[in-house]
Image (cartoon, rainbow, N blue to C red; front, side, top):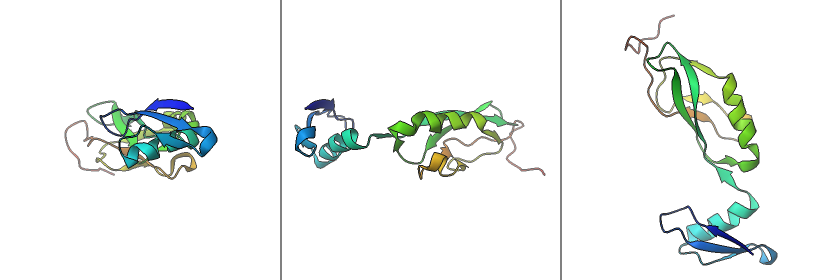
Length: 125
């Protein structure tokens, strides 16, 4: 029997998950908590946030996040690959920075508009 605190909503239910009985979840306050308890023990995932370097912008880094939850076992690989990324301004919120990161089906996406250093969003070639 494993005990966890549900993080799906602010209630923080104290779940009990019985691995020996098909990952049966008890003490949940809603169906989402039941699903969370089972998933956390069978296939845990996380949405990740980080930053990447950006050139020609007012700030040196651009915040990013994964478009969905990635398997917990791949977190190090997914984070490590960001070290190879360097963007060029301008970048718009929602722009895909890295598609299908490490084969997870999730993208790294920008979470902030990042204009050019001089304040212009015009792209010059």
